[in-house]
Amino acid sequence: MEQTTSIVKENIIEKLYNEHNLTDNELLYLLQTDAHDAELFEKADKKRKEIYGNEVYIRGLIEFTNYCKNDCYYCGIRRSNRNAERYRLTKEEILETCARGYELGFRTFVLQGGEDPYFTDARVCEVVSAIRKSFPDCAITLSIGEKSKASYQAYFDAGANRYLLRHETATCQHYQKLHPAEMSLDNRKQCLFNLKEIGYQVGAGFMVESPYQTPENLLSDLRFLQELKPDMIGIGPFIAHSETPFAKYKSGSLELTLRMIAILRLLFPYALLPATTALGTIHPQGRELGMQAGANVVMPNLTPVRERKKYMLYDNKICLGDDAAQCRGCMDARLKKFGYEIVTSVGNPRKAD
Ligand code: 5AD
Ligand code: FES
Image: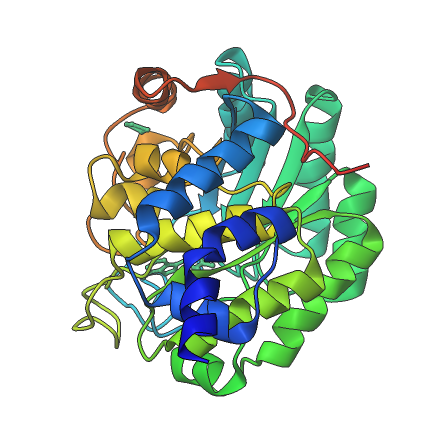
């Protein structure tokens, strides 16, 4: 018996690489040990190369409003943070930002914001249609939280093609520790399935080492993602924000975040996996290391610099002073150094068939 276990452990990365799955016990073991990290990262990088070569996709992130009606305990723009200076971009400012991004080679715009009641469905649709009309060859991604299926359908009909909504954690009891009572995991999951049904390319994801997170929670996240089959999976370390109830909690580690990225690459060979800003925040080379662990997307910030520091989901966020061109140039240089090539295409996920 002892022997069987150790044989499984020896071949665990090979098995994950070939079968794109492991048992619960194997995953729980792998999540909690650094014993296989070198092999895990190497195999994840190999898998990414097989499917995406050395190409890295870029998405231009436009943080267009930091008003939010929600009160998530971890998030710096939660409604109870009275010290957050609020802003929203006008439709014209959003379009100018897209135009600037287009010149720099961006072909995907990610419109991210808090759940801002000012942006009614009509206003969101107006912005989306205007972008669609001016930039017909671009993908439009929305990341504006939980809405009704009818709202999601309306945005889709207006021209949006992708939607990012991290599930945050797939365990009910954990979800309740991160969010006030009026929010529910069931609703969030339903939103994700609705988005898929409508025809969006969908991104889900979670924070690594958010308060109270256990290895079992992470396992549930992986199992939920296998059920959802999203096109993109965005993960990053939890980072405390000083004006939230979680101000005193420890940030997620580089080590576990990289390990999770690598596991995701091997479980979901075709997924788009961003090396996130949060990862770049906890380590100067976090995003580059994320690529080496299997990530294949970066999302440089296009938000006008005067508003950037106001979109503070967590403390010490990077890229606050750099304008769109600087961020783009910086990302290019960083990735080239590691042998990756930024491609300026829409950047769809590659499918097995
Ligand atoms: N640390 C890390 N990530 C955070 N997010 C929100 N607050 C934090 C934080 N304090 C992430 C959430 C959200 C995404 C937009 O940013 O996962 O879905
Ligand atoms: Fe923004 Fe480097 S990516 S400054």
